[in-house]
Every structure is written in structure tokens, then in C-alpha cells.
Length: 305
Image (cartoon, rainbow, N blue to C red; front, side, top):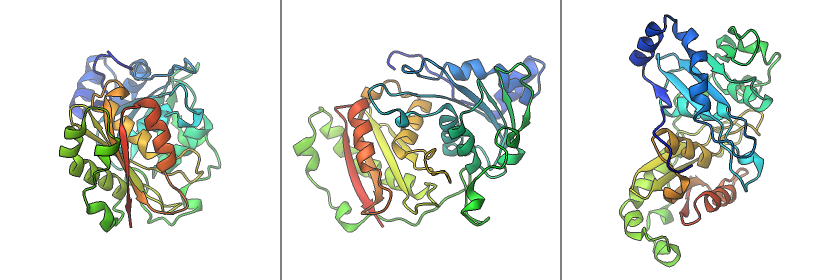
């Protein structure tokens, strides 16, 4: 994924209005015309099937997403296009509701299920661009009799796109600066990582505090740092059906790409914050994916309570 030009994952409200006006379209009509641009954001070296997703949020901005595949890793590490889109939308505060969404092809069951974590999804209109009649229709038309959050949670529990404030604090032993980097870190970025260690740690904690984990009660967050010292964070987001959940490393990788990151090998450090000895842990899978996409990076795991 190196040597790629900058890509646009968010279109501001005024720009979106201007684009629609220039084409003689309404904002909902504009979305399907942007699906090809969203497909260009995809990186599917395994399937060769680029998925593009474009959505209009309640704040007037348009968000894009594409699928990301990781050769050499199990397929379940894949970031589905709709997962990428929802993560992008949630991370950048697109408002409390998704109004319209256009996709390049019919969403898989995994993604139809993940959309259920958005409050009011039954009111969202969806257009499937590759169908003979790609007109908008209600989301329940592609997932009738849906299983979702309200089968397991009360109506007051915040869902994705709504503010989360998990009351988490780092354990005392994590506040002691350790010399683990000097022993294990051989990637040439010791000074940079040491200088930014506190920021990396606190961004990961902030991501954990914002994670959506109402089903397991096991919030977590990841912060990544590139070779220039920029930090990108991602929050764990659960699905009522469990498997469609978005892991925190993948969420942080979405943040990295949306913010202009090019080439995962530029990631030199990562911090995972999660609870210790709980039913759902991210450490092993986080180490696997980081070792694969950026072998020289160092992952530190900090526990919270």
C-alpha cells in the first residue's frame, strides 16, 4: 500500500452541497455517483473485489469507506467496506444518525448485521449501485426480522455514533516508565517512541474509554504511531452478533488511512489498553496483526480497570 496519492475519506458538508449542485443532484442522488471513488479506497489483494461505501450523515458530511484485506492473515482480520465506513463515521463524529448510504454491491450478512449497531438504522435508506434498479429502499428491506442491540440491551445504552464514556483508569504499574523498549526495540525509533510514549498511552486509553463493548463489558483501544511521531487511535466496537465486531487494531488502521497514512510499514509503535484477565481479550490478535503488517513495530499492552 505504498506510493499511493492522498485519498479523500470525508467530504465536508459545504463541499458536498457544492458537488451535488454542480451535477444537478440532491445529496442522496450524489452518493451513488461517488461509489467508484469509494471503491478506489479499497485494498483487496486476496479477493480482487473492491467494495465501496458512501454515506450521508446527519451533520451533512459524506463519509467513504472501502474493504481492506491482509494477505498472510486469516480472512477474519479483513476490514469490510461497511466496517471501514462505520468506523470512519464514528471516529469523526458524523452526527447521531446515518441518513442515506450507497454501496457498490449488496452488503454481506456480516455487514448488514454490523449496521444494526446504529440507532435508527431502520430509517436509513440504502442504494445498491450494481443492481438493475439502484433506487433507495429502507434498510429493513435487506435485513428483515433483524437481531440487534435491543434484543440484548435496554433502550438507554449508547450505540455506535453515540457518546461513550467508559470509566477506565490505567493500573498503577502502568504509570511507571519501564525500560522494556531498550531491550526489545530494535527498529531505530527508540528516541521517537520514548518521547511520545505518554501521548501514545493516553490516546490508547481515550480510545478504550470510547469503545462500544456493551455485550462483553470488555472495552479496549489501540493507538498507533508512525515514523514521524503522528498518533492514530481506534476503539473496539462490538456487534450484538459478536463476529461482525470491529477490533481496535483494525479501527486504528482505519484512522491511520483516513488521516493520510501510507504504508503500514511506517507504523513503528502501538499501545493496546484493555482490562486484564477478562472474557474478551485483544492482546494475542493485536500482536499477530501488528507483527504481520509492520514487523519492526513494537506493541505495548497496558491494563486498565
